[in-house]
Image (tube, chains in turn blue, yellow):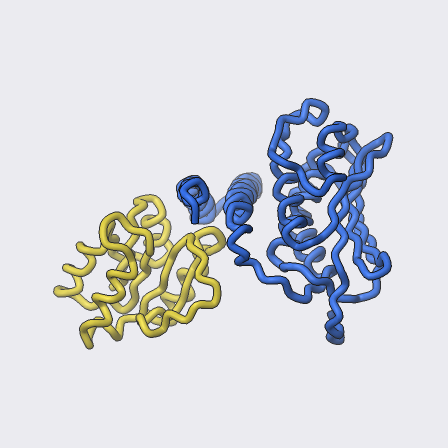
Amino acid sequence: MDVEVDGILVAAHELKAPLAVLRQLALSFDGMDDKNERIRHEMVNVSERAIKQVNDLAKVKRLDDRLFEMEPVAVRAVCDDVTRELAHLFGISRRNLKIKYSNRSRLVVANRELLHSVIYNFLLNAMHYSDAETISTLTVKDKNNFVRIDIRDFGPALPNNIWREMRDGFVKQPTSIAMRPGSSGLGLYIASKFSYYMNAKVGAVRHRDGTSFYVELPVSRQAVLPGV
Amino acid sequence: MIFVIEDDPIMARCIKNAAGADARIFSNAIEAMQALDEEMPKLIFLDILLTGPDGFTFLNEMISYPDTAKIPVVIVSSLDFGSKDLSVYGVVGILNKDTMTPDDIKDYVRKYAE
């Protein structure tokens, strides 16, 4: 492992430690009324999101080590997990999410952990940039020998430079996005890096009233188990 | 008695709060090793990345003696151990600091120290 990567992993560990402590402290409170219970819940959620982002960043730096194995993955199950995790956050942010599964239940070739992060980051991005009370959509559909996951938001359009980078395969680095204020583009950077690692095609479509981000994953030849 | 070996004082207190009044905190492995000469805990919650000798040094020391080798240990760490089997060290469980809850600690206490 090179010195830079090693340093980043140490920094990630150091950043994560206080977040994990904050989360534990919030979980330790007992006997709260409803209002404080909500605050506690949000403290836990915020800590967990930050921990996840630090973990994802550390994973980006470990991609070259080829530690993440590709396997047959059930896309709908991963989407269900992520949307369940983010339902509360969408709720308190007064954003809505609609899920449309029109794919056949086929497995894709991916790494479950990385795919989870791709969908998580795209959805978080959609939530962040959608206008209040709009409905973002997560669509999973078949496209020949690929399964395509689309996440559509309704908010400010994506700047040209980021759109071009997404079209070309991945966002080269986190950067300030003036037209989408308040973001470093870190989530898109992580999602595009993970997609690239999984040989998935990633991209964005600009609409007049928002953006769709998509990832296309190759279908696995492994048979689908009943109930998946 | 339960030992909590954790060098972050706030995290140590959180674990102790969940484990109950019978828990004793050690901020490093050396203090905990010395304490093992005086009393045998029913359960140990052990961080791995400690100041000074790390958690694995402590585990190796523990399994060197027949009496301490029997003490169940729960690793509490932010490192990802995947599905590694550490039972040769007396490890009965691994809790990830990023995702664990006080109930996870209580479950181990109920199982091994009540």
